[in-house]
Structure formats: structure tokens, C-alpha cells
Image (cartoon, rainbow, N blue to C red; front, side, top):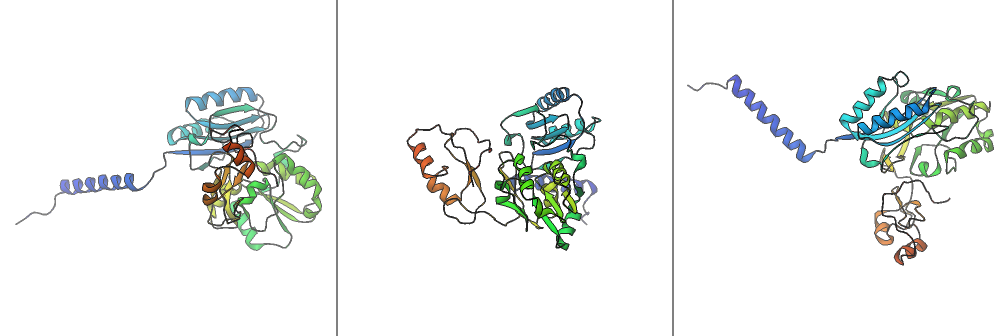
Length: 337
């Protein structure tokens, strides 16, 4: 009479099955081993240079790359690294009395998405160029992603949805029915508001941007005009809304300022190839280093034209009369509209 399986043989069987599952996982599934952290906080910093030195050493010790801007008004940062070091960075920030409650957003990627580590002190953590007395504390009311989604579902007649980003960002992704200012830089937004202030009169204004930081003071600037009925901003920006509602009212890609260029939120394609005008939302930079314009091009036209934004640049690159970009572009220049 044969005996049934023993407890030890059962454990060996489970162990073998676990080993098999791990091997299959390593072969067929890519487990992310790194990530990007995005964060900001408006908080009074008495000695920005001291904070800069601390941040520089902390990031160097953890082998993180990215950009951190520090000012008397707060800190704005995007850093990438492996899972262990980014977690260590979060813990170090949590231990600091000024930054213990920072909202860290996470994205796919790592240190490879940044050419280097840059930690600097500036006058503003985002360059808006307005009266310093107009602060984030005077900004619009924060709405959670859930509250934002509900407001957009209700769609009141007096609602104006204002994209606080630049034209090239909204070109590849924005909220349905949003007003998209034709601005090239964030510091151009106050002038746009001044020139179009009547469209906000007696309206509820929902302002949004990538991660929320730009709306903090931009909404305060709009609020200072005293024309809108109510001004809202999305807590955590597009990033947090899209995490909760990837197939919600935001359509397309969320533009980001690192080598990823953009993060796809859903399958909608809002833009078109520069050459053939087919639906496309993939940016690339011109191979002519003296041009370096970022433009949208499909894979077919990229193969035909190369990474050159127009015939003049293509000719100059082929004739080697201009410097040719050999390093990853910084993604800071854009074609003129």
C-alpha cells in the first residue's frame, strides 16, 4: 500500500513551483528596478544654499541624477535612481522638518533619463516672473482627482478649463474642451491672462499643469485679477489625475521635461506628423545641433527625412556645414508656431 505525499515532499513541491514561477517571471516579464521621483513644496526656506549643499551631497551619496531647484519660496525636484536609493531619498526627506509631508509622485524610468545631477539655487522654483507677493498661499482651491473628475462630469456652463502649460505640451495631450494658450514659456502665461482676462469673468476656472507646481502661483495670479467666480487647481496635476482616471477627460500624452519626453496616458493621438500630417505624437530633436528644434515626426518620415526638421537642416547636415548633435538633446527648444 503506497503512502500519500508527506509534508516535506509537499514543501519541496511548492519550493520547486516557486522557483519555476520566478524563472518564468524573469524571462517574460520586465520588473522595473528603478524609478523617477517628482516633487515640490512651497515652504519658507531661510538658507537655500545650506539646503542646496545638503541635497547635493544626499543625491551624490545615493547616485541619483536629475534636477533640483531651491529658493526662499521652496523646492522643486525630479530625480531618478534605483528602487533602493530613491526610497532612501524619500526617507531622508521625510526626516527633515521642512519636507516631511512632500507628495512624491513616481514614474517609470531612472537615472538614465537625466544627463547629470544639477542642484541649484534660484529666485523662483518655477520661473513665472510675477510680483513675489503673489504666492502659492493665495492660489486656487485644490481639487482631488476625484473632485476634478466629478466637476468635469457635471460640466457646468460657466466652467473654463485652462491649460497652464506651453503650446507644445498641450499639442500632444490635454483635457477635453480646454483652453490652450499659445505660450512658449511658462513666464508668458501672465501676459496671456492679462490679454484674455474677460474670458474668465464670472466663471469657474479649472487650471491644470503637469504635476501641479505651475498652477500654484499661476492660479494665484489669475485670482489677483478679481474676475473669476472661483478658481480651482488639480492636486497633483495631470500626473495624479491620470493615475486615477487613465481613460478620463485627459486625452493623449503628458509631456515631461526629461529624456522620456512624454508619458502616454491613453491611446488618443492629438497631433500630426510635421511632414505627412498623419496622426502622430512622437517628438524628436533636429540632428542639426545649431537648430535642435523639437518636432513631431512619424516613424516613416523619420526614416525618409532623418532627424532633421526641414529640408534646409537636412541639406546642412548632409553637407556637414553645421555641427551634428551627438549627445541626447536637452529637449528645451521648440519649433515656432
